[in-house]
Length: 162
Image (cartoon, rainbow, N blue to C red; front, side):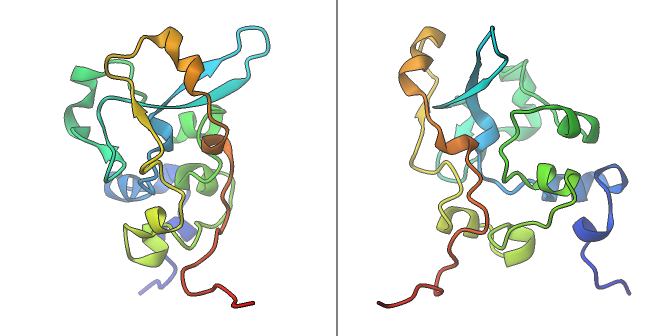
């Protein structure tokens, strides 16, 4: 039996549908509305979440049927992951596409879906819903943190007493 986990031995193209879905770390950052500077193409993050994002779990409230409510919701595939610039730098799909390991807080590594929240990587408690908001108001909700790479972060229990 191969003890190397699937994400460390398979490319994105080689993953099964189930493995692909497991690669999502559940941070919710990709469900935030983003603005694009028309002159420079720069992606500008906001803290405005899709109305389908469950603020507690940081997952889509109706993932299987999301396109009925949000027709322009992006369905990721390996080619898209390699070509779009707006995936969060800590995204599991992006890390694997770039040949990097998953961080300790990813549920596939930690065995616990809550570590993404415990590490402060998820959007939990940091967003506002787009519901009832006009797109021109998004500029009032610019946020740099969704585009930051939290990296390994600080593991609970690894704090030093000074």
